[in-house]
Length: 188
Image 1 (cartoon, rainbow, N blue to C red):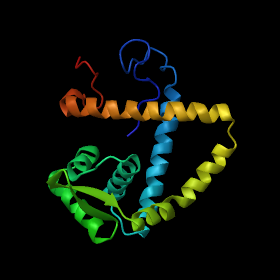
Image 2: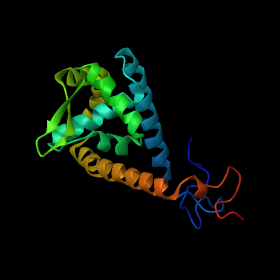
Image 3: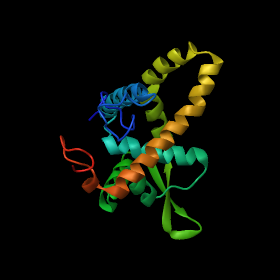
Image 4: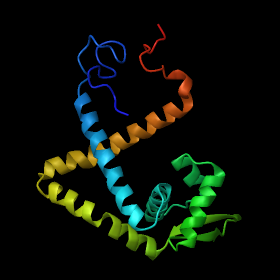
């Protein structure tokens, strides 16, 4: 689903105001949306070749990122980040443990908890899965100036955090606050 490029949410006046011009940078949202969609398509295409489900890749990514940062990651963390039920999270983790991508390590501080660790097989698979995409993206980035790279380093994390905040807001407000298609946002 795409935002309406004619209206530009947040443009002159109320969100979706067709009379006002699109918000500054609104066209960049479409570029980012298109990039995100293509990255997901790539991931879907390659994950199948590795016998991984969609949520498996996201769970592995969460575990690998936490492991890199030296922070513990548990099933509950995965459930929250991927917006999964407890049973769905358990299924994903069991599948990844059985395939040799994850191991559970008992937390020495709380023996009831188990930290998740990515195995070397998971790291190898991740490198193989994303090699082609990394090579293509790095070739583009190689053509950027140092200043452009610095802007990306600074802005991409800010944009990522903005999407996280939006997700939290959407989760808090729920579907009741979103008007049906064709109905104005204020209900009138």
